Length: 214
Length: 252
Image (cartoon, rainbow over all chains, first blue to last red; front, top):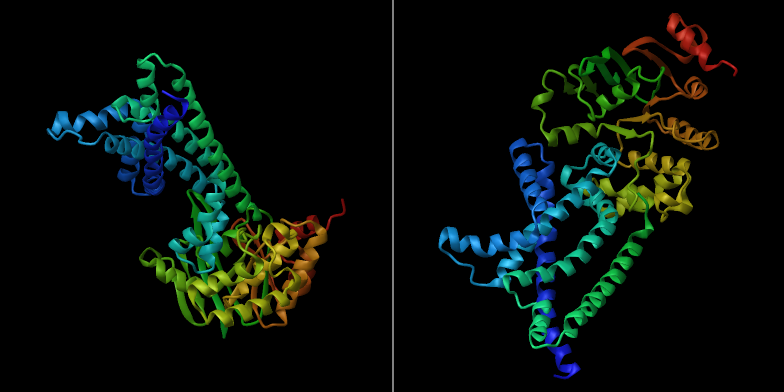
């Protein structure tokens, strides 16, 4: 097989990684906010339940969670997961939503009380204060830790290999099985380029939010 | 008729009684200075007026309308609190401007959200206020580009934009160096001619003496002495006030 053919075959695999990456971000970013509110709520039962879930998800390997999501529906409820990709997306969304929620929580709690008080004194309601005053300041503060987490996500997508999602590492392993080992190492380039683009992008976002200091 | 009447306000944090039975009243257009050492309850009193804290007991009346009763405060809805607190404005010690907005937007934000007038009127009014605090050339600056004194002047304009009946200042110059203190005090003094009713918690004795119509000296959660500046500064009756004054004007 030629170099070009292998590059194309790996691209096909990497497309799965990209799909998993995009879907995880799409759902985990908003879900994380809900989880963050849950872990900060004054309603104690909800707070403790949410914090326990976050503890379980952050305290166990993502690989194990992939197994659980993929196999448990079939074992317990006799409803086997039909799509490997769907199982991977569910496991990733839950896992990353929990990590994001902790980043959000840290960001929200780091905003000085005075910002809320200024909003209250000016007659704004809680929703207005959060969306008009607090949110953008939180976004500014969480861009660096979020970019860190998102870059980790790019690399984590290859864990989906464990439930046989045909992502790039699995594609490369097929060549290795036929005695061609270098494609396996070559996959690193895909991740490097993707993360390089992301790094530049996050740098731009940070710069864009540079116009104010909080 | 008094614009503000405060009766028997009591407030504790846990076992610490911070305000023990505070009562006073204020006429329209008057400036009241509240002085006293740290921990005497001055700031808590202001925060109770602005509903950032809720007094356990006491009654607050504005323009003969009872807006707060400590016995009933648990029944107050959030929307009710929001409308009622608009009788008061508050300028904070550390400004608390919204960092992501320009000076103009900081002043316009709350009036726009509350829709108190048309967007155009709100903007015109905001620009007038910016002129009044002397920051015409800073309309489109962000708070981080301003000095502390300028930030505090924006905060004053922001509070005025909602036309409060009574404007409160919580140690407005304590976070500023002496050079910048003057410009802020000058703005506050300028408001006096504008018929604003004001309560100023301050450590600036000279300011309190010169600008206020009434001075309250607080110590350990009670009003230890009150009267005109001449009475309180010139002829204090309480021992604590005498001690406080001699310390305040002590040459180091």
